[in-house]
Length: 146
Image (spheres, rainbow, N blue to C red):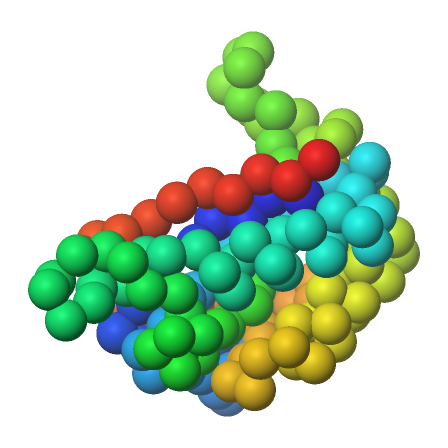
């Protein structure tokens, strides 16, 4: 499971010119689900995401988690993260989970995340989404769980 996280001042996702999810300060998570991912993989990513220290403390050191700052998390499914880009000039998506498997795991991920953190917003799985953000820093990390 792949999670590209960006520390944001605010972020939103629109579908058909309508905002379907938005947060203020927090994390924009672009979530890529691979064929080998399971609920256990999802749980590991959730635990890491909630405790990953990417926000500044009172001494301006990156030392606080999204939970410590009471920030929001905007989860956006993005199968293109699972692309193999090592060869050629066209990405291969052979490692991405098929849509039915990915949607079930995405739904599980969001439900479990909501049970552990109150400020969760989402996009719509497999929709054509427009994501807007104000990246804070910029601070961006790739989290990979196996």
